[in-house]
Length: 257
Ligand code: ATP
Image (cartoon, rainbow, N blue to C red; front, side):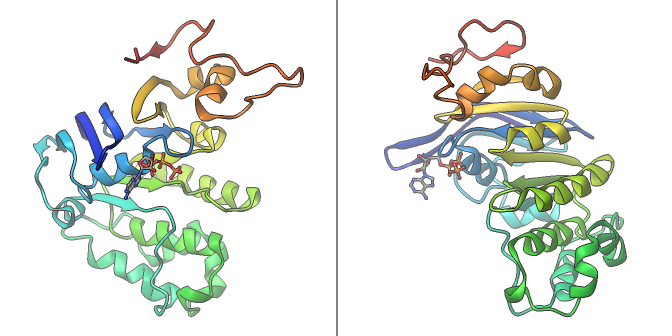
């Protein structure tokens, strides 16, 4: 479905993503994990061609390395950016309809009613303006709008960011229902929720992929994952978390230079 080879992103002298090989197969849900500043958002923006990047990119078997972002979106690579970007002066209904306009000739996977069935808290808010919605409601609208464009690949940037745990749970439950309909690439700092949804995951650190494995094996390597994601730096004894890669076996740990 999507294949990136040698992906690299620089901002001046900052190398945000460095030689990342990534793929998402048809029907797969893949998590992209990493701490603050690891390069996750830059990766997604490079994959949807919103920023210039090194390396090559193919989507559904075609080379799209130099394609304009709007054309890539028309072909079904749909990106829900961090911060949701709901149109503030459109109602919930109207925001959702915007998604339908970019569906092109793809058959409808989700119409408006299907989106409301998926995100029931939006039902009483159909006529409310975007600006008046809570963060969780905006996230549901942003995802619902993307679903209405019938993506082949849905890319989500930190869907849990800033949401209460109960709202995050609802959003991820909905994504679980959507999963059988399309491929997904989910950027998250919250590894637990992302790995609960996804089949496979990559871990980025300082722009490099340091670990790539099945979701179940990543979940079983919690200590290592925590060390890469910057959690558990201090344990109860005041000792540091294990050095990334120390004393762990199995999986594919990518050599760092
Ligand atoms: P977060 O979870 O905090 O959003 P991230 O993993 O998504 O982090 P990026 O936002 O991709 O990481 O940032 C990777 C690196 O690139 C960071 O060092 C960041 O400061 C830098 N960076 C990101 N965007 C820009 C920009 N527009 N100009 C300069 N540097 C940038």
